[in-house]
Amino acid sequence: MPVLPSGLKVAIYKDHILPPDKNWFKAPENHFWYWTPAPENPPPFKPTDVWEATPVTAPIPETREEMMQFVRVVIGLPDGNMYWEGDFMNDFPFFRTLSQEDIDAWEAWKTQGDVGDFLDHGIAQCIEQYIANQQAQGYVVTKADGNGEYKQKEIIPPDPEFNKQ
Image 1 (cartoon, one colour):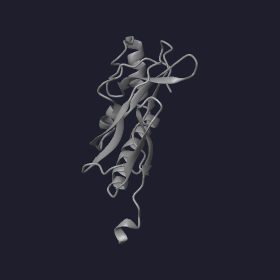
Image 2 (tube, rainbow, N blue to C red):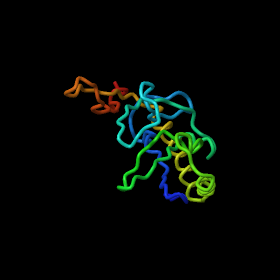
Image 3 (cartoon, one colour):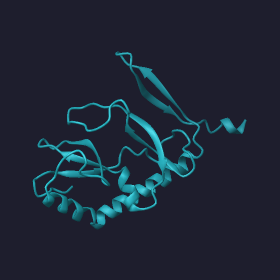
Image 4 (cartoon, rainbow, N blue to C red):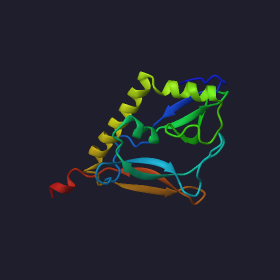
């Protein structure tokens, strides 16, 4: 996690990309699933915001540059927690203003080898998820909470015996 010259701590994050072993729904050809903010509550977000996400698919990125549009930039808080304002690696800083010195430090940090490895792993994760989901037949079970809102309770994997009948 870099600390920019101004003292701003930033990190990159891709846990909103569904894991390859998670049963979900089949994605279109050469697409993967990830969570994005619901249209009714778009970024920018504050550290205290609670926001809903919706699953969407996108073409599998083929290059590190393409992968950057799916990698979130999160901001470090003084208490050690992190939060997402809404920026991705390909457009950071979008929701905040940085000094030229901070921008130069960010751009230099993005070219480091471990950042490239992180992006390569992200591409591989998208491919693995696509392959795993080609046979997906699961369905989502939701349950109303005390406020009448529906939340995902579990994902039921396909029954391996179903196609043997």
